[in-house]
Image (cartoon, rainbow, N blue to C red; front, side):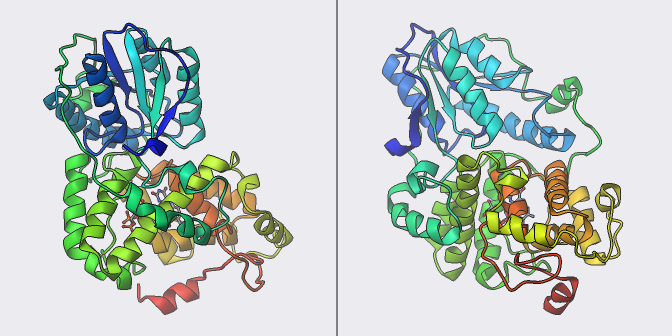
Length: 435
Ligand SMILES: Cc1cc2nc3c(=O)[nH]c(=O)nc-3n(C[C@H](O)[C@H](O)[C@H](O)COP(=O)(O)OP(=O)(O)OC[C@H]3O[C@@H](n4cnc5c(N)ncnc54)[C@H](O)[C@@H]3O)c2cc1C
């Protein structure tokens, strides 16, 4: 394992525990998971079995039934796969870091995966400060670890691309997997992950946003990847921005829940090669990891203050420009605007939890046109994206909505409302595609 992926979070000595604990949070998979493989090695080294644990909180920030149903479906398969590898699995209705802390009291060491958002970092710090044993974080949901890629916030993709591309031969490679030497045989209390619907019935969560009809889990993600390699990738370079064609990978929800590794996806795509692969790896590695870089280094990633100074200044200077219409949140949420393309995109988001990237850009930009202030456009964009998108609450959510307001972009010639931020217009969309 590349040492840059391994981050000790405290300096405690190994405990006399009964097992090594893998606290699973971001990487919800049994395969191509560096944190899990690191934990297997550590368990073997200590002559102990490995226990994986997942804490299910009904209060996950901004999550609703749609997200919980999908996640639990994926965890059903992950739990089964872990058991087949001889790894114990505990799923409990408990605040995630508290479950990890409780189980840490009988662990020789705790291994966890890396999460990039504020609450994920707080949870890991909380555990590391209190656990009686070492807590080691292993970064497996980035091709190039975020601090290795760049030591501070990158202004745009070009900076990161220059740093990341030369590092790929070191980080883009398969991960060796093996079963732990000692098979787990635990009797720790746990919910039964084989019955997600029963678990869902125990959860007091927002049920106004219902589940979507998309298979969840590592098997479904790998199936989606296979179909993409065959059908989408050959057309990706030419048609990825065309919302009328279904050529993109559709992998973002699986990546968001850690059901598939970005390294596995990048590895499989790079083995095929060609212009499609180059264009895809630009999105999967450079763009996605630019979003990781943004939330990692910018404490205001979900606030107006997190946007670049020039963008805030120009948007503020145009905040009083007349708007063609102002829609309250309820109308936007219900897709009740005068723009049929926008309404279609918003309806798709509400019904399917998905929106094509090109429409997503237009959708976010239009919010600037229809809200009284740019701060409101940011707030509403994040709210709708996070509430309805299956891949929402992701670093790419904050970078994506931020991009609509100038983040990671350059200034353009000045226009009403947008100021120097890149604009997209209904006329432009109509000219480009017959929708
Ligand atoms: C307003 C707005 C909001 C967005 N919100 C999200 C979000 O909540 N979650 C999310 O994962 N992405 C978000 N994006 C980025 C992008 O729209 C999605 O990642 C992409 O549409 C997912 O579809 P796909 O998996 O078929 O992508 P593909 O084109 O197949 O790309 C492969 C992978 O690369 C990554 N990727 C692609 N485009 C981008 C991008 N522009 N920025 C960062 N990573 C990218 C994703 O992980 C994606 O799964 C947002 C973009 C905008 C403009």
